[in-house]
Length: 160
Length: 80
Ligand code: FES
Image 1 (cartoon, rainbow over the protein chains, first blue to last red):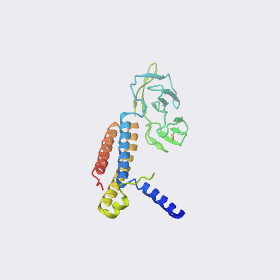
Image 2 (cartoon, rainbow over the protein chains, first blue to last red):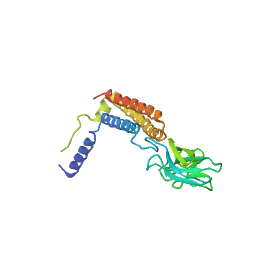
Image 3 (cartoon, each protein chain N blue to C red):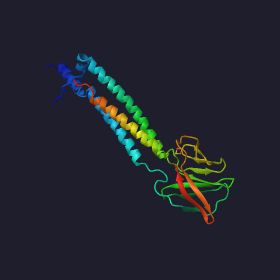
Image 4 (cartoon, rainbow over the protein chains, first blue to last red):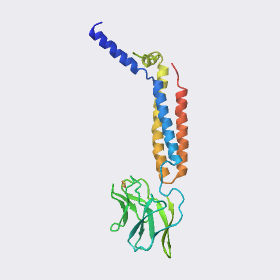
């Protein structure tokens, strides 16, 4: 067998090995991927991704007094749930999770613009509602319910 | 050592074009199902993080139906 015939034969063998994958095998692989996507969605539904405010949330004092236009930060309901509160010019109080819904940077109160802003990718949230005004965040900020009592400001719950 | 497939897909296409066409169609349909499932997974994650648990369960039902469809397409596919 000369050199060229040997090379041709080796090449043919390689091609035949590739043929081990049949159309039915491709179909089986795709069905496996489909099962994986089902499993991934089941994992999401089972709650493997932590959300702000998961778990019980008893009322917690988060600030004493805040002047109009000023902000304060706190953790609520857990220590791993950073939040930001703002007293608006009209005297009302609002508070939100300070974890940006885009890629989890810290959201800041920008007094000059009157908005909550994320410096990472210029996400802008409406301070009155938490809705996204600009930038890439896909969802509004989870809202922290506040209650102003005689001895200070209390966080009483979370609305996703 | 060289492994040889008992089934040569080229022979299947040549000798049984109906089987080859059926398998090709099934592969195409399952690929479309998978694209829809990818969308459903991202939608479910977004709904979960947004607190819309009802939507997550509906998307899970959709995923299960999509998977069963893909599975049936595979199980019922012709063998050479
Ligand atoms: S992390 Fe906030 S805009 Fe990207």
